[in-house]
Image 1: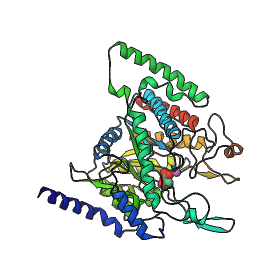
Image 2: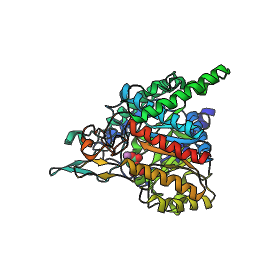
Image 3: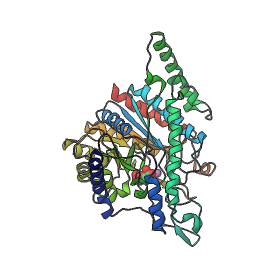
Image 4: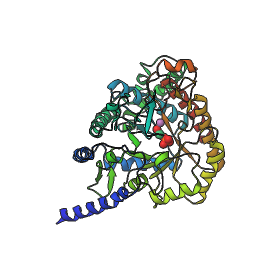
Length: 456
Ligand code: PEP
Ligand code: CO
């Protein structure tokens, strides 16, 4: 009897969720073989969840603290993860980079830093065009490893639903390694020096080294005083991705047996991209039915009304931590558009978490055809973010960045002054340009300075 009641409740929850199927879903691939998509979907639906409902709830609580001004969100990782780059070394270096940035920010701000990777699921990309043309040949655009291959051949660019299942398994092994790194001793604060090892020596990691020495001293002092805390020996680390590909997200959405509510178990936090945040579109509908913390990207054309209607749809209870607005205005626009948006939302009594993505509004293409970003523009947008929040009296609650632990040359500038000619030396991203390890640390030091001003 009980089982039947639970089943009925679950069917009702799924029936509500499936309202999205009637709505326009932008940025979906055209799968040549719908039966193969159904088979992949059934296979995914039979797999264990990647994350648990309780973890998503805990992240929501952490984000609520950030929305109140008591914590800061650091969210970062690749623009597009690839299956090939899901190696132990690359995952470790990305985790190390985020841990290092988090230490710099925590120490600077004396505030908890919530660590969320763009990892273990960031495999699907929105594209400005359905096709890509090279030397007169037009093929489907690369939509991320979850959909098709990057190689420019008809075979590789054909959407292949088997990749949905492969993406799940790569996410599972990535997450497994992240959990091992962050719970199994690697994230122990006493390892603060270790995280800096293996990276090419540079002024940013030398500066990090002296900070690590200060932390060491503080830890020895605490040890001598008998302070012991699990918080020092392991860290919470969450994963997130853009919930773009609904054929992946839907079969991984499950009913939590404790509460009967729906959770998307493909990641702790899911966000809706700038191109798919239409109020009456499928993505907003879909995520309105799951309990995970949700992010929405807001570009320079977003109005106060857009923001308020998104709040009504995605966070009708105005539950702290449920909704994060990730603004990506561009360095040239942020000071004009963000303060008004913040004030409008504030005046309506809503308190979403506000985070800046200083990357996606600052893309440029060089004469030689590289998609890049200037480190100075990224920093300028970051400063504009802090200024706008000072003006509106709201809390600048976090940063969302595209970065890698690798020594790539994808973004211009930074202290090593990567110039246009240098871009081609190690440009590895299949999508947007990422900050390299050194640029990521430099950014963290500068953001820490901004946070210190708030703490004062
Ligand atoms: C992204 O985060 O990689 C992305 C595509 O961002 P946006 O939706 O803000 O353009
Ligand atoms: Co990107």
